[in-house]
Amino acid sequence: MSEYQYYQFLTIDRLLSAREMDHLRDVSTRAQITPVSFGNEYHWGGLEADPRDFIRCCEAA
Image (tube, rainbow, N blue to C red; front, side):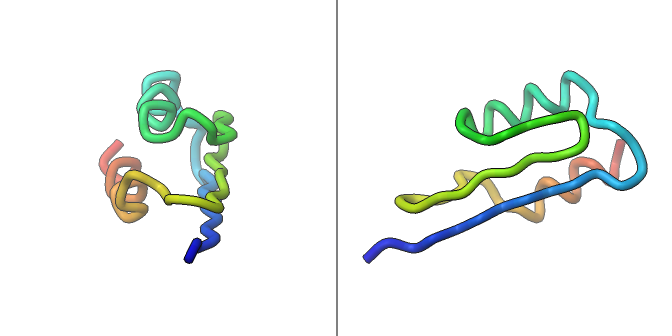
């Protein structure tokens, strides 16, 4: 049985740095990554990271 997952993260107070976007690219090679967003959908498998870590990482910056 497969599970559909859709993830969309948006920045609201600043742009993502090149280093942050590179880190996100390491998490998902198929995601659409811009200085203001990360988006990806999965039909088979899923995100290989804990979505809460995305929030924690950017809160510290």
